[in-house]
Length: 136
Ligand SMILES: [Ca+2]
Image 1: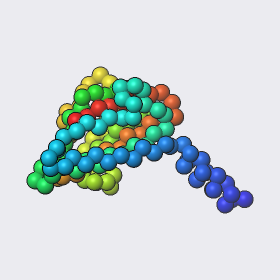
Image 2 (image 1 turned 180 degrees about the horizontal axis):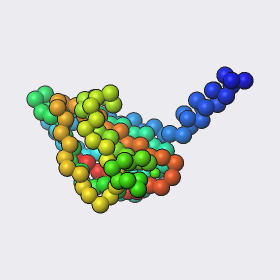
Image 3 (image 1 turned 90 degrees about the vertical axis):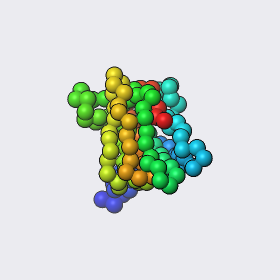
């Protein structure tokens, strides 16, 4: 009985999020590009878990500059308890968190990694969305 319940929970949580794994490899000849939430500037879907890894050429540092931000925020703006974009130093979400972003009324300052790679994770909860984000 207990095992069955656990299995149900696992199945449910797998169904909650639709994954949108993406890789943004900015190679030596380009070193620039645009990353947006799915459908931007149309509203993003609920229950998303999207990630991107940015890699730039040797000797450069990965960086993003916001060109648009409209992500559901909480009543305490800095908390971003519902939907958010998190930026990590390095190629995975185990790196140092460089920033966590939501809201719409302020364009955040650019974020610069310590090295060639940066990892972005965008999460949305089951209700209320916005246009999302766009970074270069
Ligand atoms: Ca939401």
